[in-house]
Length: 135
Image (cartoon, rainbow, N blue to C red; front, side, top):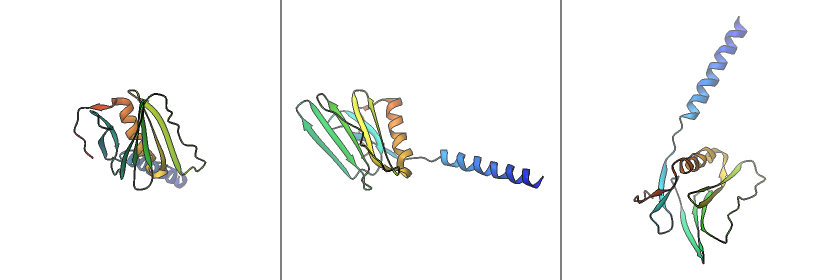
């Protein structure tokens, strides 16, 4: 009886712990793509926002204080590859939304869910248009 009771209590505690983790809320900002009327939904706290223009488009780099980053590519005759990484503590992801290729990289495990949520929101809702930026 005591063993079953202990297992039941332990199971309930695990379920409650999982439920609390799923309620984590993240803060995002709408960040302007180059000088267009389009905006990305990204985690707040961008330290640098740099644009590299080439003949047929541009790359835009959003760099965070912890050196994680998001890079977007809009244009042709260029590639945007996910970085190769052997360290399981750092993560990357790539996707394309509304003709804009994007990746995040160098994201530590504790921030992976935050960056995934931002990318998931953009994938579900598309790229925002004609909104004033938050950041």
